[in-house]
Image 1 (cartoon, rainbow, N blue to C red):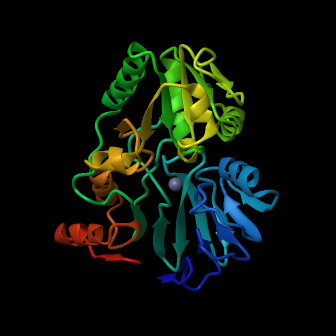
Image 2 (image 1 turned 180 degrees about the horizontal axis):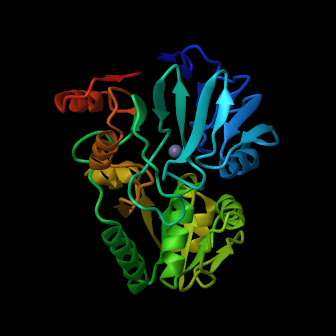
Image 3 (image 1 turned 30 degrees about the vertical axis):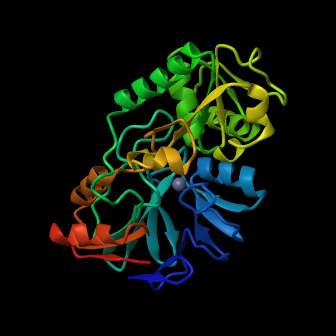
Length: 315
Ligand SMILES: [Zn+2]
């Protein structure tokens, strides 16, 4: 049903799913770089195609709105929202009397900037399991927001600039929206700024935010929250800002050593992935007869087998 060799392919079709090697025609679930590599032609949502071309340059795109049917090699397909980042899609493939869903990266909780997931009942579910261990249960969104605000206010109380480290695509915009809605002004690095502009093209409305100027110092950043991609943690940008407090925004914050691993003052569990309970909820709602897990801990499939699902991890 599913072939696994340099990416996933639906048996009997030419349909590749987030292939890790360049293909003639490939479904791209979302524009994160571990899912979106260069292909000759891509199938994606319009939002993903826009973000993909922003990152990888012009390409041949076949875009479909969520829920609109289209045909590939005798199969009827539909893209469904995945709740991960703007434009992230699952693909539902009806082929030879079976319904196959490939989730890509997904999240069940509501996001401020990504479309809400639509779970489709299916026979075969191919799902991510990034946080497929039982201790990855994220706090409620309101609690995460409180922790974020507490971190920012605490930094200011100490006379330091709060710096949030977040991936340029998705996580940064989620933080930007969350903070903007609460009246904070953010200063963001260039890649985050350009992607936020693309989010706006698709109707996401942010509060006040500014492009970070090179050489921004503590005075210039006073009263503002700085958001940077994680690789800028050790950079001139941080040096110029003077005394800072840094927080990494990541689901891995549930690991006790996360703060040390990322060498930050704090780790806050703002995640764009499903946690362990959400992954289980997804499977229960989809009611598949076969589950393949990808992108995560192999033992998640074992948890599913203990719950009575026929589940296999694809390495
Ligand atoms: Zn992703």
